[in-house]
Image (tube, rainbow, N blue to C red; front, side, top):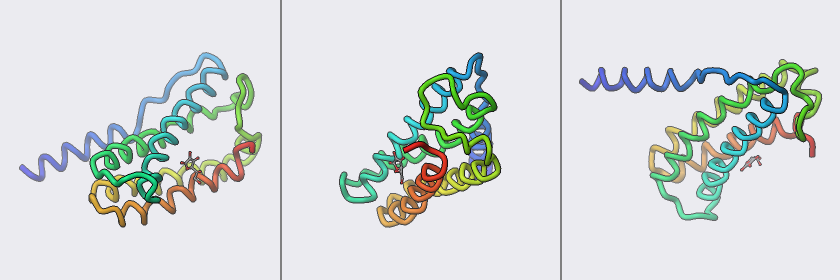
Amino acid sequence: MKTALSLMLALSAATLAVPAAAQFAKAEDAIKYRQSALTVLGNHFGRLGAMANGRAPFDAAVAAADADVVAVAARLPWHAFGPGTDTGRATAARPEIWTEQDKFKDRAEKMQAEVAKLVPAAKSGNLDQLKAAFGPAAQSCKACHDDFRRR
Ligand code: ASC
């Protein structure tokens, strides 16, 4: 029974891991989509950060839910950085995203790997584990912003 449940959970996680790629009629739509995904990501990540840094009381259930949202949202923006979506709406995306694609992809993958670790950390109910996972995750956000987001 326990195995069947684990398998079911693993399968539902696998389904979530590959969200159907959204379709974009216009560059503006792609830009809006990725900005929305990153806004949701930042909102929930920010709340985890407040708990990790002691600016908000640690609430294990809230942290676990935030980490789940962060892990899913982190997978969403990337396909919305397609060719021709460098302009079309106000964007902080730097042109290097399209001229240094391997580096951008590497940063995106590193970020997803780091934020995925927030999920078990938050679900442990142990604030020290959340703190340990939060630092590298925040660093992975910053690493990409430093190179690929306009200041
Ligand atoms: C956040 C947020 C970011 C990252 C980044 C981490 O809470 O909105 O963009 O953390 O500042 O360095």
